[in-house]
Image (cartoon, rainbow, N blue to C red):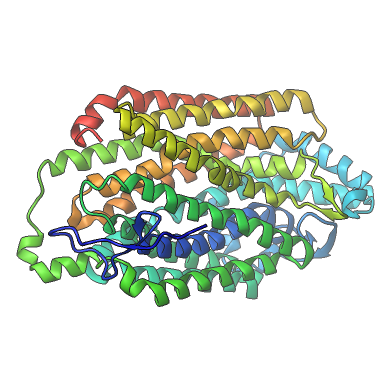
Length: 517
């Protein structure tokens, strides 16, 4: 594909990157950020795809899977994990009575074995011990998963503040990426430092996530109509990393052991930092902190028009998005459990496809649909019929909720056994369309509406809705072990649709406060 590199004169009064080169009609810096974010998301989603299965089948049980998805042929002591006894005491107790069906189904599967995975039948007493431990760990791991994926979206509020006030976006990205790489390498090096590795990832993401997104907005002058398209392209970078990582990290975890999946994730983060370091100097715009220093602090603190209303509208919109993320994040939680335990995965030329490849479905559909939707919106904009950002986000929530109709049908068809890949595949396809109507549109909206003097902190606030949503997703996930699958997926459907209707109900006041964006 031709890069179509051109030179474009600078916008009067706009302090953009030193290089005026454009690729495909966008500043060259967009594609530096695209690639950096791609490798960061490779790192994050690689470990996220393994996280719950790793806790349930290896880290917090005594009879362990040495390789993801294979035989329980190793032993270990969860008590050796630093901090586990303290954290275990903070988590809700599991009611043994609610785990009966899970244990019985698991025992049956283990006693039968699985020839497609070269798993021999297991003795009944050992099978029951494994089943009792893994089934009891399911809701606990769901809670930990929710808190971890939530906290990585809480720290961006602090990281954005530090960038706006002290570090600037570029230094914050370097710092965050370095901490995240160290976190992945900690998970690789020593399983007993599991929570130390997670802590490094949580802190690192706080510095990295809001500031890489803010740098995309800095490439464009106010009112530039390319901005929404830029965030759609940037979002494809996010999902390219998410797509590739589960093919790599999941396969390594299956064939070489869990820890090698984390090693690959850490290497991916290092590659992202190298790209930013070597290519970002001339292609990225100056940090907002640097711009303020050049203009003088007195000028920088002048409030912008309608500032309070815009901030208030963003806060309300973020609050309404919490339910969207709570439902959406079931992909790595209960949907991954379904993919692992209730789905028949194919064998291709003798290679057993691991269930962690499920995490690549969503980014694959992002590639498929993002350019298509971008063209539709561009055509609508030309005709003056394009939906507002807030309306798109309402539509996205409703589509997300309706996607779980597929899983309701699948749960009824499959029953207690295993079933076709069709059900989670089609659900994810529809869910992805809903995501595209909300997530990249929201990122773009924050950079358009936020006051310039603390745009990174406002981006952190946008991610705060993901924090609460992910925490909620963990607690919702506990119901997966208590309710029937049909009831559980009906709940997800209702929550998604209700969130969309709530955003639609506030459409007019939100748009008015944000300048009809």
